[in-house]
Length: 94
Image (cartoon, rainbow, N blue to C red):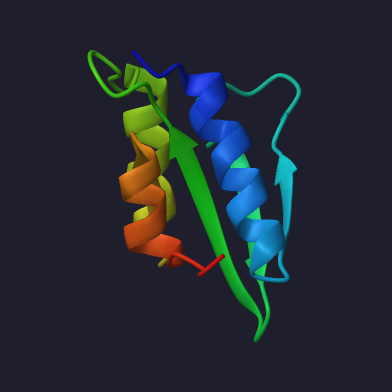
């Protein structure tokens, strides 16, 4: 089974291959924020919540905050696998 950490490593590699930047999000004193900030060429900014493929679910604080972000017009991607990452951010040819 693929771990959340392995999926995160894959996301970081995929974003770098696309010429983008990604940073781990740690908001002191606030729960529920997505795991990663992703910035791609062209000014595309995304927030990403990573979950393990089986059994990975949002906590109540994550559901609440993602709802609040959606009300502000922000989309948060919830990704569970390498395939999810490739669908959202594209697969680069090697």
